[in-house]
Image 1: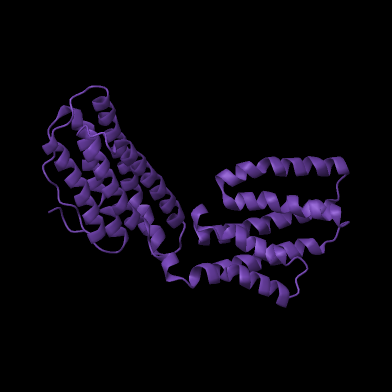
Image 2: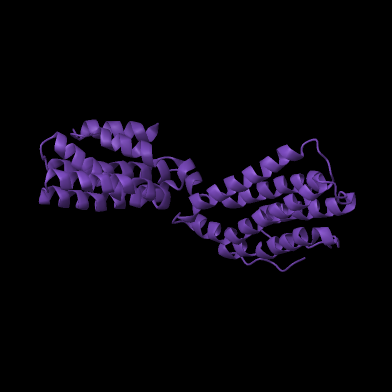
Length: 297
């Protein structure tokens, strides 16, 4: 609300011809659920600048109508590719498309080129300052908090799935995989941050991969139990769940996890191996944050 209000006010105060472009830029860029606000703002600005150069080149050449239609078709076809691969690439493709369409409608007004670049730059600046830099929480690393919560969710899922309990198993499995998906999203949002949040997120990446493999290993054993295999003993299940919860405590406490004696059961070999790998990689984020992790307890 603050950023959109500023965009409207700036467009009115500067008497911009296409003031709605400023507001539109803010509305498109300021979407934290789509990725890093900082990254989207920077990529939008760079992509628009490159797109403006391409659009200006097309307008300067003034090609025949059929060539113009072909160029617009190529730019439109490239939009889905850019949207998937890189937000800056998407902005690069969409900008000349918009400029050419507006140029056709307004009979070749070159002011459109400068207006598009200026309005986008103003919108990105509003997002970076009022929507990002002024809020300390936007620069605080989130991946570690989400990682600890995901570990607790996986521990609950393991306890129910391997012991043969069917009351909440399906719901807990969905929660575990949803938590992993949200964790990946938080990682992608933090990775491009220029602050320490980006460095910490990069250090967490091996742990996130290990957690996904651990959850898949738990699901593999759970499916076997569902198909008639003997459930895992209560003692072994509790030991594994406790080990995962200990990893969550280690993340919150910024220390290396304790390493208990894990079950010696052939059916749990993959689960134990993946859990051991996760514990081994939990030392990385502490080092990335500038603190040396203590040795295993």
